[in-house]
Amino acid sequence: MKPIVKVEGKTGVILLIGQFDFNVHKDFRAASQELLENAEVSSIDVNFEQVPYLDSSALGMLLLLKERAGAAGKDLALVNCKDTVRQVLEIACFTKLFTIR
Image: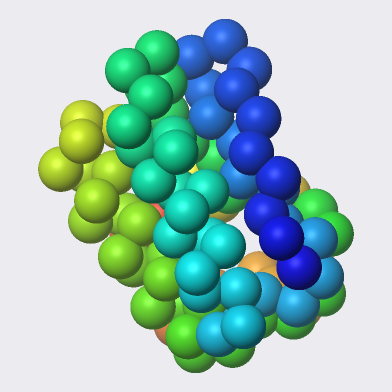
């Protein structure tokens, strides 16, 4: 899976397709960095619409992105989570750390 990066107004979107696991680490970091460095972007949405599965390394990548987005003064939201993904996020208490829409 290679994340797709889009900018819609002031919102940067990282569209994930397929399993979100350690194999995506390098591409996810590059996609994140592209949006973090974009001065026009004030918020980042990570779109899980086409993600059936995520593992613990994906949770770590999201925590790192949250930290980096906060340091860059950008809002971060996890959007379009399927039930299986939402359950993993809830078990990991990410509902307390992230905006999930």
